[in-house]
Structures are given as structure tokens and as C-alpha cells.
Length: 514
Ligand code: XMP
Image (cartoon, rainbow, N blue to C red; front, top):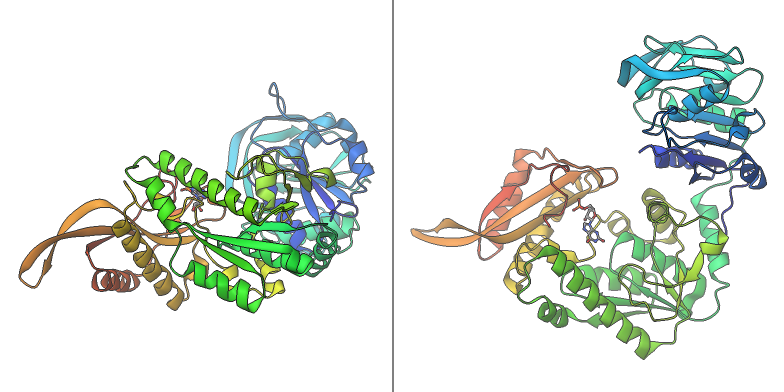
């Protein structure tokens, strides 16, 4: 299983928060794209036989000390190239132009006037376009070799071309959805300029992965949690290696309501995966007794999980492979090189799993983004309920129960979260928000039951929107929906008399309460 960049688009990463987005946009055009370190040389790109290269934006100034540089040969006009923002400024500098701090910084929407249609702007059908700008540096002077294609009020050189060559630079961000026709512009670059062919589809990925994975010799072990990534990993491996896959579901007692049943139904019964259910909730509760510190809770859950998993692997082994649901952003973030050599590597210590199991790690989703994983899961036959499931933290409800984890608080947290999820599902809102749950701590508030006053738990409901969990905004839920959630929680869950709604965004809060 090897996805190489031949015929695809390399994106060089100069540190922009949008660098991943460029890859995703290109892939959504049906062309494979991957993020490479900014220092990747022209020769390496040629050896990879890329159809073209895009230089991302970045936070640095091209003239500052230690600013990330590109191989100068990238700008010699041979490889089709698009420089975006910082990438564009590098292009200007490489050709002898001047980049400096603009008097008027541009952030947000700006209107550009296309002065040279065709090429990058082919068929866009508008002389003026709204673009997303985010820069303090600008091209101040451009050399004669660069031809101006578009200008904005504060950037006279908003888009340029290296005369007669397939190389372009834009000061704005075509990858951002606020840029009108940004995707059409990228499409012009990818197909019109680079001549790339559609070589990327989930169908193709599925067929290639199944073929590649079916060559694994020996038995494969996979821990499945009910989350999207581990469910798709299991389903894919089952398709490839059949009975040689052994999936294990460890019930930590810290999972969402109905998680075990869902795994049994959709993966076990419907897809025919053999899943061993290991009941370990008592062991986790014992290990967590008396611990209120969130980091300590994380460590204890991680260690206990590793112990239970290791015992299972030893009893049921040997296994040659350990399958993990690692995604592309995790691979890039952890600084692991892309390339065939690291597709299957010796297991050291991944995600808190034991380090001395001498299994090789196989990560079949390591080239995919989350939305692609969801598409793949749907193709394999997993239902919407599984592929659209919200993210859930590894330590589970241990970090949604504030303070010591007790059976009482776990029960309340699980039931209240189910009410939140079910209500959003009924309202058609579940798939539109990033996460929706309830958390509970030791806050007790006074309630009234008939004429009697009594103390009960206060539950906090949290619903957030996010694109990548780095930032998140609280969802402005309709008060009627909040009222239904609140009524159900206090009516159906014994011991709860108060419900609050979290209006905290990230930052400064985090998504999880702990
Ligand atoms: P925070 O709370 O840091 O969470 O804003 C960002 C995203 O990560 C999830 N999360 C975790 N996932 N182990 C995980 O596997 C953890 O310890 C953990 N803590 C938070 C969280 O659900 C959110 O999607």
C-alpha cells in the first residue's frame, strides 16, 4: 500500500494554518495531494514526478532571520508552481523583487480586479472577485519577469505570473471558502496549468488499500472503541484479511451510552467482524478511586487500558500486526516522514499502548483526513450513525466527570449526554455540530420536589462548533431545544435538579471540561 505523489500536487508547508486545507481542496478535485516539508528540493519534486507544487502561506517574514526558505530551483520555471501568500512572497524575492511590511495590512475580505484573464483566472467570468487576505507583508516592487494578473486596492500585485512559465503567485488565499471562485482557481491551476489527471477517489483508495493490506502475513490485532477511526480501520482490515483480524472492545465503563451494543451490531452482526468484548469497568473504577486530578486520571486510564490490552494480546496472541486508526493530520503533527518505509513500522509506544509487544504497527488511514475517513466508512457499508459519530476523548467520561469519578456521577453524565445527543439528532442538528455532551462535577444545588426542598446535582450541557478542535465556538441553540434538553434531564435522571448551558468558547476554555 503506497500512495505516491506521481501526477499529484505537492504542497510545501511554510507553517500556515491553511496548509492542510490546500491539500484537502486539491484532493476534493480528485487529484492526490500531500503536505511536504518546506525544504523539499526541486530535484526531490522531480523524482516524485509531481504534476505541480503549491507553496503554502506562513506566519514568517521572508526577510527575517531564520525564515523558512524554499529551494531556489523551484522558482526556475520548470515545475508548475503556485505560491500562496508567504509562498508568493518567496517567489517575488527569488526573482529579485522587494517584499516589505505593507502600510495597510490586509485581513479579511478584499476585492481584486483581474487585469489579465486566462490561465489561473480562465473561465471565472468576473472581472472583480472577493478574496480572503491575511497578510502584513506585501510585494512592494516586482521584477520585469513577473507579469501582473490581478490587483487589489492595497496590493497592486495581488496575483502574478512568471512570464511565459507555468508559475504563479497570489497574495490572497484561494483555499479559503470566503474567496469567491477559489476552488475554480485551484482547479485551473491543477488541471489547466499542471495538466494533472484525476487519480484520487475513495473507491480507488479502498481497492488499493484492500489489495495492499491483504498481503499482510499473519494475524492482526485491532482495538475498537466505537469511534469513527477505529471502526473504519477495523472494517477495512476485515475486508482485507478476513478472519486473520481479531478486534477487541475493552469496556472501560467510561464510554458513551450504548457504545458496546453499537459496535456489536454494526461491526459484529452487520459486517461480520469477530469482536471480543472485554469487560473491565470494575478494574478502571478501582484504579480511579480517590483521584480528582485530571492529568492523573488520564495517566491512570491510559495505564489501565495498556495493561488490559497487553494481557489480551498475550493470552490470544501471537499477533504480527497491531492496527491503529491514525489519521493524516496526526502523522504530520507528530513529524513522522511520509513515504513507504514508515507505512508499516515497528511498534514503539503509540497512544499509550504497551511498548514490548513486538508487533508491527499498521495504519491504514494514515493518508486520510477525517472527512475522507467518513466517506470511506460509508463506502465499506458502515451506517451514518457510526461515520458521523462525534469525537470522544480517549480517557472517556473520566474527563467529563469533574473531580473523583464515582458510579453516581458516571451514570448522570452518561444519561444526560445521551439526552443531549438524541435531542440534537431529532432536531437534525447532530451532524452539524462538532461535539455535544453533558458534564457533571460536585456542584449541588437546591431543588424543589413538591413542597420539599432537596439538594441535587447540577449538570452542564455543552454543544460546540469547530473545524479542527483547535478553536471552537459554543452553539447558539434555539431556547426551545435547550428547554427540551433541560426538562428531559431533570425529569428522567434521578438526583439532578439543575441544568446549565456552557457559553464558553475555545480559547480560553478547552472543549472538554478537563
Ligand atoms: P480540548 O478539550 O483539548 O479537546 O479542547 C480537543 C479535542 O480533543 C479531544 N480530547 C481528547 N482526545 N484524548 C483524546 O483522545 C484526550 O485526552 C483528549 N482530551 C480532549 C476532545 O474531545 C476534542 O475533540
